[in-house]
Amino acid sequence: MRIIGGEFRNRVIKAPKGQDVRPTGERVREAIFNILYAQMDFEGITVADICCGTGALGIESLSRGADFCTFVDLDIKPVVHNLTELKIEDNAKVIRSVGQKVRLAKTADLIFVDPPYYKGIADEITNNAKNIGHEGSIWIVEVEKKHELEFKADKFEQLDNRRYGHSQIYILKQL
Picture 1 (cartoon, rainbow, N blue to C red):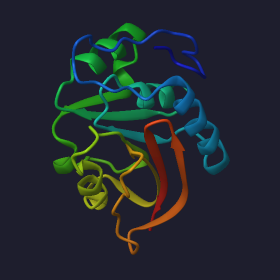
Picture 2: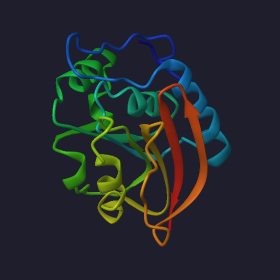
Picture 3: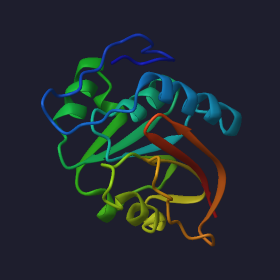
Picture 4: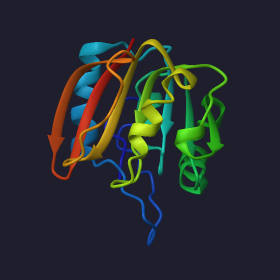
């Protein structure tokens, strides 16, 4: 698995073998970042990568100019390894926690949510929005393609929705 754009383009990041990790593929990441470039400038933003796994989405953001990323997962070994290999630990904070309960010291401008499929975790995380993002934050939420994300219409505006293989990507703006 490799970074597809920015400073770390073509650098390899590793996913653990034999574990239940489903990293967002390169094709889907490229599509997500193409959509994001139409919505925002990456220079100087703060990012949160919730249920980060390998940290691919947050690392991709740092590679493209984000100042800082908070990575959240129960198993932090893969993301810590990848941050160390790229020597970008100073631009990151890693929190060992379930995504539904996380509280960030500073809310993020861009939030990625990529939890395990079939568990309704994405719905719970978006309902915890005030502890993660702020008005105007962009949320990228990946769910299984048959799942309809249940988010509160008074908290989010849906900007886009795309399907890629077994995944469905919601692009939301926090109100």
